[in-house]
Amino acid sequence: MHLKRLYAPKNWPIMRKEYKWIARPLPGPYKIDKCVTLNIILKDILKYAKTTKEVKYILNNKEVLVNKVIRKDHKFPVGFMDVLEIPRINDYYRVLYDKNGNFILKKINKEDSKIKLCKIIKKFVVKGGKQQITLHDGNNIFAKDDYKVGDTVVINIENKKIIDWIKLEKDNLIYLVDGKHIGEMGVITNVLNFENVQKPRVAFKIGNEVFETLKDYVFVIGKKQPVVMV
Image 1 (cartoon, rainbow, N blue to C red):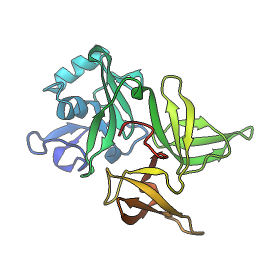
Image 2: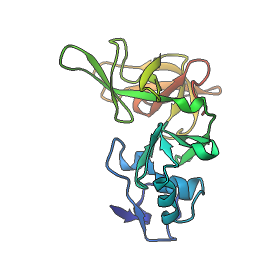
Image 3: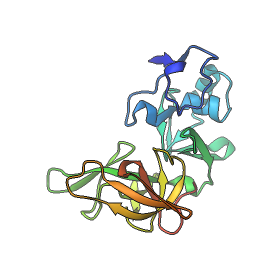
């Protein structure tokens, strides 16, 4: 359950040569390069602890919640758009990327910590004819027929209900989660859904410049304004 620091994902903001080993994230919804452990967050990013022993003490005292659920394992994986909170000191954070592709924690307010944006990555029909969608964080939710892969749903993480829906369409705001423009925000100018294309692309604008990227790299975050603090 460990790996060498030198071979850890490049988007982990860690010291690579200070120690030899680092804890590997627990198996879960995220690939290893799409998540970061609570140990790294508390020790290397937020600097709330100096050692793993101190991190374990904080977690065992039920001080840390991820998406409103108490987490006690220092290897628990946290990914993009997840909400981390430490109620004792009224600190709330959302996991994002910086422009170098590294994980960062954006400080948010208490009200913003109640919602989370999730990208739809799959849609299928289950027994009984109900539509079910799979979200980028691994959760499955029954949803309306209108939802499409690539759209974003707004989740109330207190009751796990969908409260809003943002389409992947022209003029909506996006956050780039991979590629050359990772960590930047833009505005969709066109969705290039050509038939028989395995990797559809999206054209977007940052300032006055127009770029193209893979649809998989695009995360819709709002219409005229971002739905959450980013």
